[in-house]
Length: 445
Ligand SMILES: [Mg+2]
Image (tube, rainbow, N blue to C red; front, side):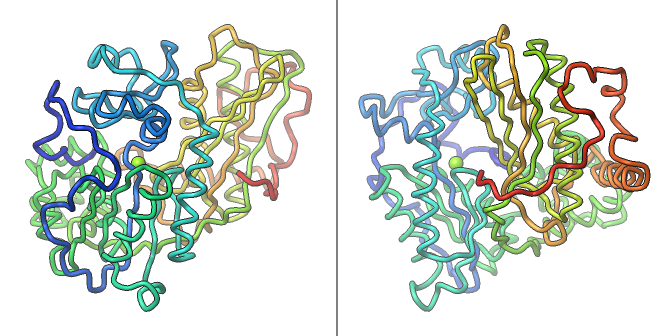
């Protein structure tokens, strides 16, 4: 969970000028790398990725607040330099709010193709270390380096090797968290950003975790945060000291078990190589181009349902959701978002698809001839521990969606549909509704 740990005290003070940093210039983090014995999981995360890539071409902007975003009113911050973050600017913040916080920020429109190309080269650096890579998005990945130790050396050394190669080859910086499991490694990289490396020794996990706020734990959203606050549980240590029965009464049995495990530093999820070549999705070409956002959302709802159904039918969960929007003049844009954890749920896919459509930068007058929803970064659902979005009862959603699957398999697809789809919009579409779920195909993301 990005940004759930309050930044170190030297960050977040508005207006304080920061020295420009070039890759490799910054000294190593103040604390010496701890004992990395048994710490085989690395979380590598590029620092302010899109913005850092842009600064390679605009070195005169180094040291200044820079935001990557579409300039249009409805768009959101895609990336911001640490100088902009000092003013409170954050990723996913509406651009209007970011401008109000930091009027002097330079706003650069995104170049998604370029970021994809840089990402491929960064992932190739990881690939040279180990094939055991689980990309979480364009700019971050988990690596399990246990098979690389004999060839390359200790985990902390491998972390430094990766940081050096990324800086030398790509002229951007990254931060590396190293720990015994994914959850702690990811918190470690957040903690040492930017341009840092932090080892959490196997014997030092609790010492690291317990002072953190409960919001640092995966799955603690607003609802759960409130429930824990009612128990006066502020830190992970408070949570760890609370009897499970008390937690169960506050947040339910599954969530309590999940939180108790994390607070004890336990996370059994393995680094899962994604099934790169596979994607699952559905798209629809309209009989007439449509511009009404309500109709577009309705189509996204239908396509999200088909995609989720096909994922469950194939036994997959997806990390990344992509929306494809083709305009009446055949210009095609795609927007992707990687989720914190893989999903096979229509409601999560739909929410992501809507957010991508909202943030696509399309003018409100744009008319679409096609929309598509695609799921990539597939992992076997059986091995994926899906995010507990606590308070939103995802297990109930999953049960409900599986029930729909069962009914559909008995009575035909389209028998059960979201209420928003029931009042006949069939005339909008060229194909009948009762088609089989989209099949997995071999398209690359
Ligand atoms: Mg990053």
